[in-house]
Length: 249
Image (cartoon, helix red, strand yellow):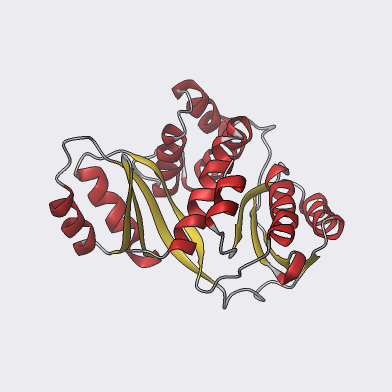
């Protein structure tokens, strides 16, 4: 069973995303387009596209919106995206890792650097946070009421699940990056739907902050997430229960 900090990170991010549904759709559309351009428009032959579509459906994106995002690849005027990452520190030296998708890297790095500077942080060098974040597969799986959980958990562990936590009608699962594909296929074969299934950067150490400091860090994170070029933002804040309640939406 996972510790409090790890799941607080994931739940806080999900809560914030739910509150920004339109912005999340924009990011999902970009991921679909990038995946289709990179590996082709057939999801059966393109694992990344298949996963992007799966996540879009989990966010309740309409089918025609998904199809339009894929069809953008054939548009000669469609933007071509690159996917840079940035690493930096927020107030109280809070580590922050950013994944982007952009058609203008100069604009993106200038925006990211400015956001850090205006919010009491600083942009670092790539690789400076490698010792803090591990690349892991993270699933949020929807559980029907009649699910036999003990049997399911054993199957998930056999397929590579390292940590599992139940939350109301969902199950949160973490696995090694190398086990992601096999575990995702097994979940599909068992007929379960996922709210999300993706590779994430999971902290291996955590930082506890006072309320005043955590508020400043969350402001920085929220401002980064609002930038159109930013796809995902990771941190290692160890939320208290009261902080979790306040900053999960």
